[in-house]
Length: 53
View 1 (cartoon, helix red, strand yellow):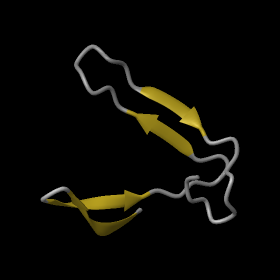
View 2 (cartoon, helix red, strand yellow):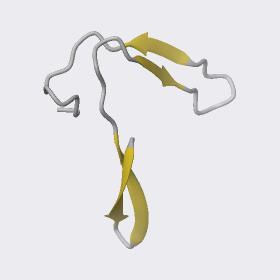
View 3 (tube, rainbow, N blue to C red):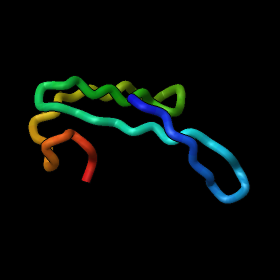
View 4 (cartoon, rainbow, N blue to C red):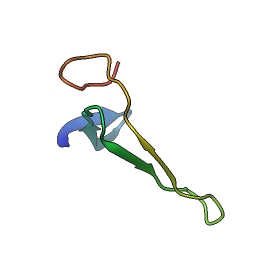
């Protein structure tokens, strides 16, 4: 992933650009203690370069 500078209101932040290809594994960690980790696989992408829609 590539990080680029971004602004959210008056806050400077980094925006991560995610690219995916078919077959990549995607993991989403739970944000609270009781939330489970979710895992999946990318089965299709809309753009040839893998960028989100």
